[in-house]
Length: 340
Image 1 (cartoon, one colour):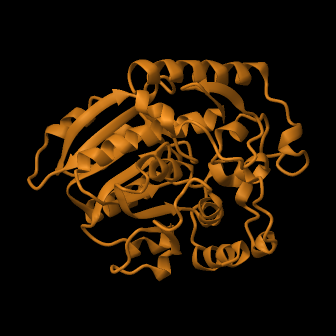
Image 2 (cartoon, one colour):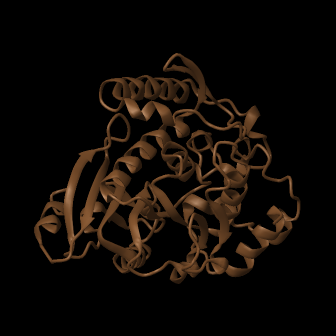
């Protein structure tokens, strides 16, 4: 299926996509933008990656410059460059002493990131970026969660899946052996980008996981990456998901949107399923309302596995790993109230 056909599908079937200041540069989302099949080549070097690529998010006054100036001609400040290198050094130190497995996830495909960092990782030269390193950390954390699921093949949901970079690393790291079906939920624009990125990825075994659209999914299908627009989430099977992931995404939503995703979470999770939630303890939504992690609407069927400040970067972020229980308990909700 051509990218223009995929994009048209998402455009036609997701006109109810929510708006957000985080995605204000997509106000012009329309069909004519997708009629060229080469519009996604080197997409990480272009304005379309603003919003799901930390490298472009650092570009000052990014919304106004999205079309007037090619991103490759925009120079990052010394402060941003120094931050990226300090982050890289800190993450490598953390990996070597705490989570050596994390090193296997570092390194991005040649999709055209503008500003890259060259690192020597396990005696090999690796081209990476600030965003790639963040995804490497989250992929390693997600892989730990997959082991907790303790199933040969887990079904996974990721809400706010960006261009598909995290799930690509998860599948690559596990070689597809721990994952059955993957449901990726995001705005229609992002899902079109995901289709391109995951289809073009040279590191994924395309024979293990087929990329399909939500309308083509059925319960008989296995080893599928299912791209789910936000108004098609009913396609995700009830009580069937073993790992539910949200990283740095709930903070971009309103309380109503977060409530809707928690309704989905509670409906689709299996008993003993794992929820990996890494988000800010406090952030304000597009309307200025405070979104506090302590107010997230977990029900009473969760038990805490681990709670820690996200290491190395974003000290105002917390990693919460919880397990779905059969019986109700208030213990975790009491713990949640202490987060700030």
